Image 1: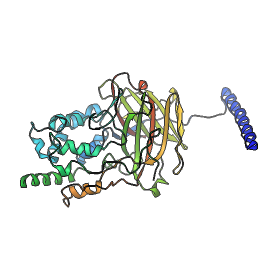
Image 2: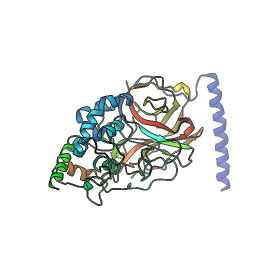
Image 3: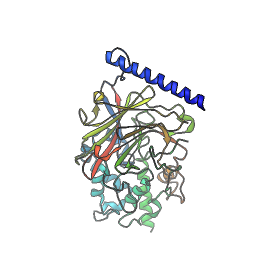
Image 4: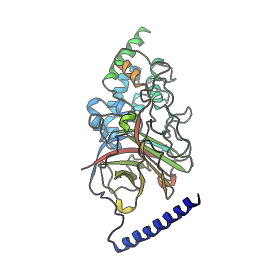
Length: 187
Length: 216
């Protein structure tokens, strides 16, 4: 034990000394740690905010385009297409008086979804849907797929198309951590 | 009853052409299976409720065997975009890209330009964390009230995608109860950043999205 302590002290001193040397070298501008090269232009290939929007609502021909359309242009480019898609998924949505559980008809719902940004609360609960709060973030445990299925198929009270409004997988396959980095260790 | 069943059937058939895999796993032909393929974004209040946490996952559907050889791509920039005035245009970015076993983080700061092309403002200071090797405990770096992680984690996404494909292919008309998590036992490569809410915005909300960008 004592020997280990001495060894650790020695290491600490050596490290401190060499660190000082490094820092000294830095002053001379000759050696020392150098930031890697980060120059150049990086061009977009993929993007996501809310889960599964591109997957569910963009047609195959539009999927690549959706990923390289800036969010502020997505509404104009995709709202009408998303509405057509929603009406195909749940034909009841072709009636403009038909709403989902958020009170949105097809035009209103896809108007929200087409601009794919995730709104995140800075003042309280952050969840995709927890039974009370809606679209205030996305927590790891949120059952986002069932929420989306409910909003697509469930109609105004969430009771339409009962076999399609939940996949009945309600939780992750591993428990999340209460502290950073929050995600479970890999399999 | 019969009519609604037919309608559901029609709806289900319609889905078939459009769904690939949720959430954003292999969502589009150009990125499927590549190192720029983002699977999910998470944004939530931290354990310290003064903080907000952003998670970007890439390269999903990794089996344990394939996780061993999975690595972040040094030519890919992962960029968290933060709009704090409600116009869906980024006011701040947090950039992450790997070099030689470390993930380098830049920001949050205003980007040099908004939109599809980015440069890394490496002169504005940076943070690093060693990328956690597969099979070892999470390596965490905390600096200036920000915490950083990069490495393989269990994919937090869950969905009975198998049953779903049966539904869209017409061999089933509803989900099973209970369902089966198609993503059980799979990993993704995760980038996790936690920082004070005050560093991202002063209002009640921000809009967030994450992008992957390739060096040209």
